[in-house]
Image (tube, rainbow, N blue to C red; front, side, top):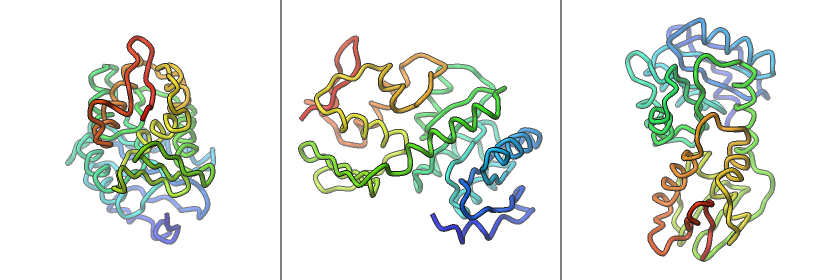
Length: 244
């Protein structure tokens, strides 16, 4: 990501522009409630983040595409363009980690948001401390830990480049899908329970049932063109295993 693009900032007519620190992680908050944007901005700044804010879907989408933040915090209910539509449009052009915010604590709503391309979900009201922890978890998973290249059959994952190839064809994954595949490829042929996947990929106790793992496995299979007999095999009642 280019820091020079961040330093341009955002005009007040486009959102609530922040002073951009060159080396601090950059978070874009898109929420129509100014009080929520202000609370998040103050809380995350105190923990070392740079924060920009937007209060409509269209403005937030424009700022995300122009400023290229490290993480987007995105409300579901937005004027002009709803959060799910913003998420889908961002995901079509970027793998930036996205945390969805919603006032509805319904499993179907969380699944809809995650299917739209979000990497995490947070129910209102929430603590800024928890939000900061989830932002840090996404950033840890996004930045490479080493230059390892993992292969299984015609599937290749280059962790230093965060690139996934299937039979030489590049595959675009969300940040969470990538981390799920990375976990599978670091443990080939090993049966991974849903709890182990939640802990290894999400990095916290997910406040819902573990069917979120099934949602992401289904999405990952689709993007990998994983048809029967599958690479990612279901071990009924236990979890999943990556096999040739």
